[in-house]
Length: 441
Image 1 (cartoon, helix red, strand yellow):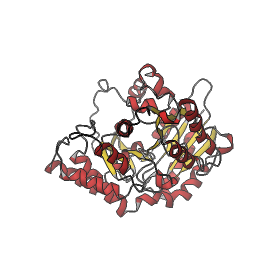
Image 2 (tube, rainbow, N blue to C red; image 1 turned 180 degrees about the horizontal axis):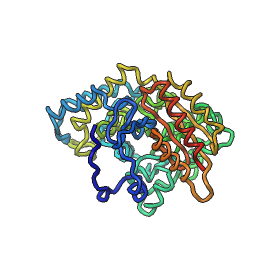
Image 3 (cartoon, rainbow, N blue to C red; image 1 turned 135 degrees about the vertical axis):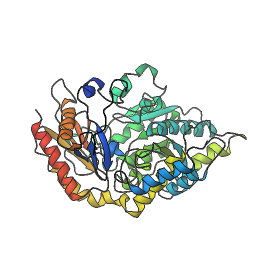
Image 4 (cartoon, rainbow, N blue to C red; image 1 turned 90 degrees about the vertical axis):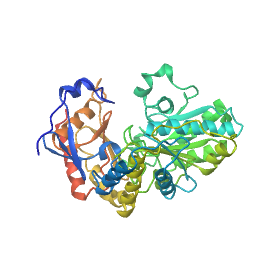
């Protein structure tokens, strides 16, 4: 195969990238199939991250490719404002069949960031319709990631994402629950750690200081992925659900990463046995093939907003590409692929082998913690003094040079392979990370 002609790198301002460093030594992908990428030089790269947590069913799946192609030939675009076409209705119905019980109203977006901002608006509209306009506060969690819209970075708790825009965040979003990360007793826990459920009680403290009647919603990831694979302690999410119920607060799960089989169930809510009031998704909804996101709402949230509104538009919100025909086609074909191949439970089936493999890295140089859940793992290495994140970045670059794609966040190496991965791929992945760890200084 002829190598593609390389364009100039100057014009593109890359997202979440050290642009100067990347353009000095680019890492460029050219094609993908199954659990592999190939770079522009023809080298095969094992995909240890499902692209960017999104290609759960593997790359270039024929059913999905054909569905997108057929949609483009048949109906390339249709407006979604006061108009419709069958595909988003069909996809919403299919999704409602696999969501946690009661979350059967679906609003389509184009990304996880848009889903979070949409959910914030839904919460505001819900309490306005209920005659509770005093509920204006949104509570997030330290180290929480909810996308990059101003709503998401406001309720989110990643310091670097917030500080660059600190003077422009949404009001009433300054309250954050503590992260469950960093408990010494939980280091190298297999699956859910035992300690930390009581950290959910910080919500009671916020209710006492601000007044529970002023808090509208709590946003959390069932498992925090972008912060470094932070698995919820046993009983933590249950406790958070109970406190929200006691104070009439809506609980919102950000399942952009944990949705569509990653946790060993369709959604993290089902894996952990806790049902939220709203749930944001994206990524795996179309297997990453076409941008799409969604918010799943409890039926009574929808009914409260829609049925109490005067005639006309009930919810003044939406996107030009909500329910885009190509995205819907990809979503329907993706669901067919997940269900026919049993991929929602494959992570649970692979979990014991995966867990043993990742924890075999415990005694490698600089490793200070390993965390795993479903088909996800984070290997945290000690930071160099004054150079937080340097080892993580170097591990990412080293792995790529040796044929493996991993993510890094700070000094945590994150792995989340496609759900079609085999034992041999897992072995190759762990060997690749092991080699990188041994080469780190």
